[in-house]
Length: 299
Image 1 (spheres, rainbow, N blue to C red):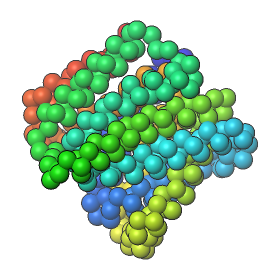
Image 2 (cartoon, helix red, strand yellow; image 1 turned 60 degrees about the vertical axis):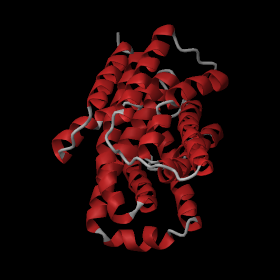
Image 3 (cartoon, rainbow, N blue to C red; image 1 turned 120 degrees about the horizontal axis):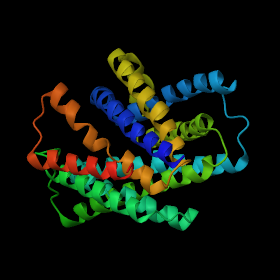
Image 4 (cartoon, rainbow, N blue to C red; image 1 turned 90 degrees about the horizontal axis):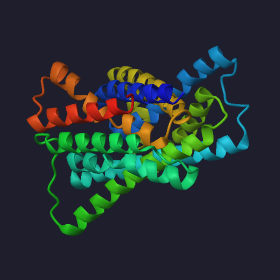
């Protein structure tokens, strides 16, 4: 059962790699807030169809109160709050440094999983997690000008580092809360609860940040953005998140977080083949180290 969970986590990384390519295209056209809101809207529809086909129930009407509580909390922490800190850090310190901090999300997930769920990963899993994190760090550090940003003052930089750290903790906490909420409940419907709460959360955040016009009026007029967002939503918040929830129900939170964290590595091949990018040596070396670390989970 644990092996199935590990495979599902790796499948999540693949799905999120595909979705990232389409979300990047959509975000460049209509902005981050619009894509974040509408990707969840599409995912809600996809999951409703899946729930009807597999459970005869388009909405999670049979979810116990405990599932709603934990999964709603996981959506607010993992979908909404973590992304606010994440995008703020992108602006303050750049994507390269921010991704560097996100490489520590798996250790945070293992720690929170131990504190909240009493999970204690085996020694092999801890070693594999460390190897994967090291590979991701190598890859991120080896990137050539991947959104590098030099803050003008120390206070500005400090806030960026803090926000990047909080984003990593938020992502880790969201995964552990999901594992807690999904226990004994259906994966598809559990994912739909997270998407519903995240959808409401991003709608509120968009209005608070003054992005309502772009999200609700400008985005629906851009057919290319609609197509890219829909495809990304299928592979990301729908299939990808469902696989991640399935994985969390069947393996350690730290293990799932580590394998899912391979997304920055898996995106290198399509970047080379489709976008003609030329990664640095350290980036390739880091990718190989991370893949080797992931393989340790399956030995």
